Length: 424
Image 1 (cartoon, rainbow, N blue to C red):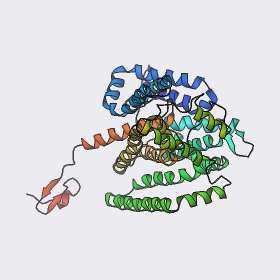
Image 2 (cartoon, rainbow, N blue to C red):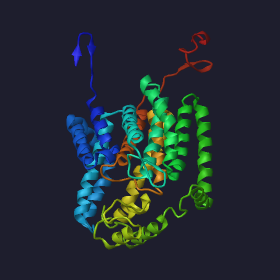
Image 3 (cartoon, rainbow, N blue to C red):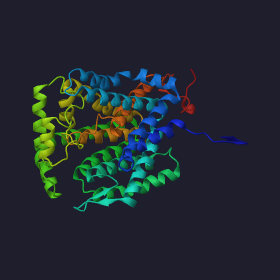
Image 4 (cartoon, one colour):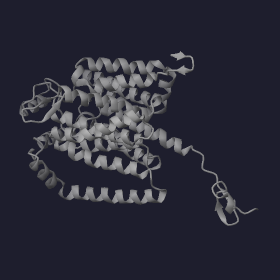
């Protein structure tokens, strides 16, 4: 809309991205309409600028090898129609993520996510429910779902509050969101969410702090962080099971992760039977499949209800084998490493947030399954992180090197020290 002396510009891509994300984040409120709303907004984004959409897919097409392999698994799948159907939906989801990267900046995405997740938090406070055990459920179906939502919101709120480019009112709202996210996370009584968001928050804050440091200081900070990560990994390898059991017992949880070790043993047995290709994408948790029915019955879960092996690597290897799992590992850990490299050079709030969210995904991958599913916001963010990191690193690579002026005394910048320059 244009008037005399004023112009109002509407960012159509950001609005459609907001609609797509809102449909997925608020799935508990929208129900069956969520998938339809997502398809509508995502499809509108793709066709609103077809040349840019094609360019995004062409540029990052290697990422789509994963959904292509999931589709291919229909050839040997126990349930070919499932593999084909869900494989197409996964392809649509990941194509949307790539198109979004081409149309929406990481900073805009961060602000969109803050608003969307913030709506979920406000709705949870206003219409939230409490479980029989006293855990806060919000608008979600379980305390773990609410805990996961709050963990992501906490990271987003901190990043937006620290972002100098965001509008002041949005930063103030983010500061309030960051302040209330901690207590709400405690009310969820989700020990896993609390334990896993803490190191991610530390990484986010360290990255934001590093913006004030010089290059040598950044390297020193990175070295300290590397030593801390190595020490943490060593502790987890040596005494991880014992520590986890103690933490869970102190918080009133089952040290066996509510029977997940039994699930893992079952999954590993299926991997051993078909290690390379798996059973087929989305071909295990199917009504009528005897092993799945047995596990549903064992854990008192209604047949056909949402369920998984509570371990990303085991669950996905069961369905698409070690070949498909290797593709997923490349995306998950490659995205984290790429974004870490970009964040080291460009420690902006959006980059720091994407790195923290990817780290949260990695930590949760050992006890939950969040990727790669159709119409999944975590799958979209994982895919987008890989593309954002690759695009940022390529931009740095093609950035011209700074020019320096030489003087008899060595390398000297005339612009910075004109008084010290000697005539040649």
